[in-house]
Every structure is written in structure tokens, then in C-alpha cells.
Image 1 (cartoon, rainbow, N blue to C red):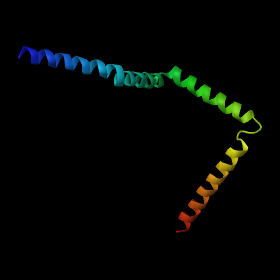
Image 2: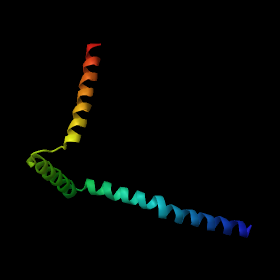
Image 3: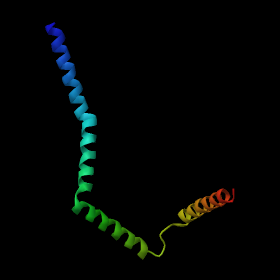
Image 4: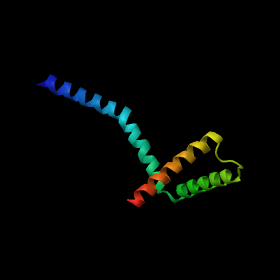
Length: 89
């Protein structure tokens, strides 16, 4: 009976350490990110970063390369044609 309890304790401890080293770290990182979003100061910083990137993008003469422009154009045309088909039904 004593060996059973000792083996159970060792296995439980090993599983706990394995959990903390793998999944536990990811959960802690995720929860820290969530907590930073609940902070008003962090949200303001994120908002300012997004606005500065939008300003940088709007100051450029060309936002998309030729290949990106062709791909987006084809994709948007496909969406428009599918929406027109669904509205006529």
C-alpha cells in the first residue's frame, strides 16, 4: 500500500510539472494579454499605434503592389457578382 501511494504521488507530481511547463505557460501568457487589454492605458496605446499605421499607409502613393492589386480586384469582383446573384433570387 505504501508503494502505491508513493508511486501515485510521484506520477501526480510529474504530471503537474509537465502541465506547468507546457500548457500552463501558454495559459499564463494568454491571461496576461487579456489583462493588458482591460487596462485603459494599454488600449489607448494600441489605438494610437493603429492610427499611426493608418496615417503611414495613407501617406504612401501606392498601398498595394501590382500583384496584390490584381488579386484583391479579382476577389472583390467575385464577391460583387455572388452578391448580385443572391439578390436577384
